[in-house]
Length: 292
Image (tube, rainbow, N blue to C red):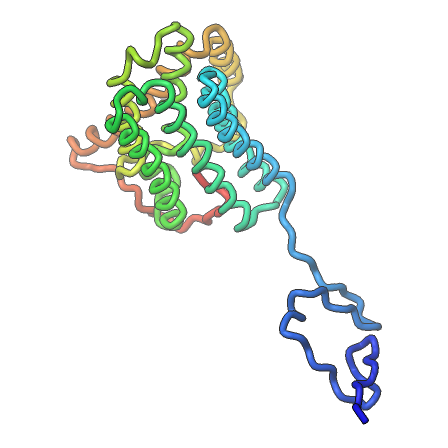
């Protein structure tokens, strides 16, 4: 007569006192809580608030690509700018709310690759570089590859680089350089096909500068919690008023100035025999939530 296994009890032990055999998939199932245990198994999760801002930045990058495919380049450029603002907020919100995590840092880097790597390259290609054939998509690829290498190097060198400087042009600034140029030309009603070689040069400059060792000031050593003179608040209000007068004409020169500032500082220090070091000189805490 066939012998059937006895019915197991709820705690996984059969009436004979032998422990129940665990299935190979048991580790993927929810573990039961034993009677008398005060603590329940903690579930893994992610923090909602900072990752919501990162998701919004990722959506803006995707939206910019879609708008470029629909020949709405002004919408695409503004979407990249909004992604820059959201990217600057997610890390700060994570620090303010004490919700930093390695997941958030990696998610932010992947979002940056879409918003500041793939999106500007595709928008520039659709707007102006398409008419250059192979040279056009090669320039767009150089920019896209430069953004990927820039983010990968930042993630691996975050503990050894002086936080006062970025090693190479940061990807949001490179994207702002590309989007600002497109926005200015669209505002002036200039077709991208008339500026193919200028667009080609800007794409190559931004892509190659991202992977150089030229130091760009990061503004991370600015302490916003310290008191400032009243005139500083007035100057900030004045700057916002100037930008609001004609954003395309005001923003693009600012992005150009920042894109050249690293080279100016680098060669100036080289001429004096004191090159700017990007190696961290002090033992300062590293915040892994700051991804650029």
